[in-house]
Image (cartoon, rainbow, N blue to C red; front, top):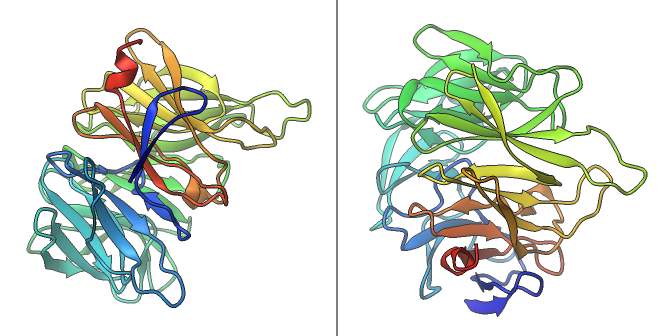
Length: 351
């Protein structure tokens, strides 16, 4: 671990990894920290000739790195309320991980011959859900209840991804139609009990909606609306609008507006938002992390980063559980993600 002053913002940043492999924080759509905020979790890329890939945890204060899983596991995510992680081995075996001891317990199997298309997610009841590519090549939503067999609850010939079960309502699973770009209708909500899929944010043809996340209490979702959709020839910036919707998708408010935003996240107390600022759609910008206060609309660039080589190297910022720290991936000089934290206490002093 090293500490440095951000050359633009002047704030102190801690960097925990140094490559040459990708060391990327968990995706922003799940918790990234242990229940006590002592550790955060990240994925280390497996390089040829080495055997240190997989999920690792870092001690926030000391920088000590501890391996949690090896490279045969995928889809690692942490529980919203319990000190448990969930991961998948050999594509189908689902394990619960005690995040204190790193002990792993198998809790079930996903359908044979398939693979997950994102990370695992869990509701407060223990139900695990994911988007899945079945052996017959259909895409599906799959649930795994404690002590029961996995169940395919929905199938589609669309490529399904970004599945997120509502943290406090096991009956609702948010998912998207993944096009790796714009979609006619990207966001969907599935009712498990009623076996009913409906659009979440209903899109107009000119809208570009992307990168959605539940609040920890399952009451809201944040999503990004990009405007305009298309390349910019005069060098101007794209607007990123962070939209907050209620659980049912009946009411939406634009709560933050800035340039070149992409991935939003909500603090657990729902008072703060953060997002990464990224070069995309023909516009180049100083990349970094932006903080927003919902009550006032105030915003501030708090950390600058390198330029991302791939989507896996995006900053994907997210809050710790207390809401006083942001974890983000900081692309190094080669554009490869390395994990960093920034303590928000120093920012609050002059907010």
